[in-house]
Length: 423
Image (cartoon, rainbow, N blue to C red; front, side):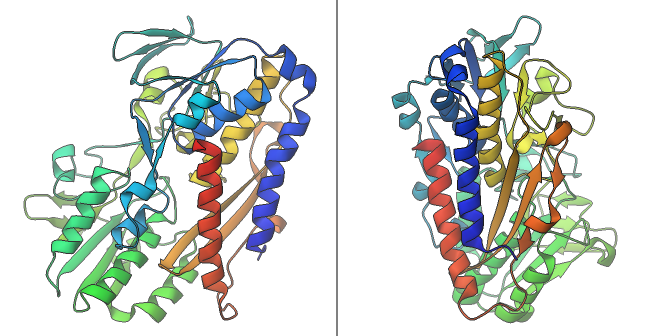
């Protein structure tokens, strides 16, 4: 595998090299207005790096919330190992960087007029628009799963109130209860996320409610880091955690929120706590702007992240189609920096330049142990290509202390990524 330390150094080098290839001419010449919609790992990072690459640009961040609540590390909240306050980040550093912030929801985009209209009625003009809207739930794509059902069977796939709801349900469950999770078919936000969550819920049950059981019903037979997770579950949690793939009747076809039940083709499971992770799509504004295709996600040019469907609109983060790069916070952070670089060049009448991007997904298997998968990607020719020789996964049979070291590296990544995005 690629050493986790080497991966961190390499990823840091990407941002340095990006700054170097943004010429001084670009910094001086780039003028105009760039509007960024969405203040998560992608949008906040893009806004801050745009100001660094091209200080003369007017950069506006449109975000309805007064703070950002991070999905990465929120599974530790479910396990009782972390408070939600530690997941919450203000936008004060962006204002200090000279970024204008509008606290409102983006409602419509007129690509021809280059105009964004907000829910309060304000119209915001742009020269270029960056959309980083994250995901929306595809309500009723899973029969019976609606916003009302989520009040009983939380998805917790957007961190915040849903995270706390699921946490309270786990706390209230009697020892000996059954927790049922459903994992969707790909693509969705954070491919290994459901399995990290299962690990940490299982840890909570093992330490607090040892007679309980966790059942994972999965719409697929394979998933990110599957051998690593299966080995960890067998070693750490034994029979209290069971995973069923699609070929073992694991695909959930319907939920009954009134009975807290999940149904497959042949079985019905009534849960004491039900965590339904439903199908997803790019956030609402991407659909409205016409940058999402029939899949619900947004095709982009891999060099500039400009939409292939609408000119002057760039899409980054979970909403974009960047496969084989996964939908992850690490990827969104990297894409935010590269997109900012390319816009600085474009607005200085310079062509975009091909770059290299990296991604590492850390997953906790226990509060003090983690595993990871890393990938490196070229974007020559406007398409993403993975460099097979540059990535890797954690060792299946690691040296003593390796999992603990990866947990510390995950924490280091979180601190670095949130610092870059939010200060």
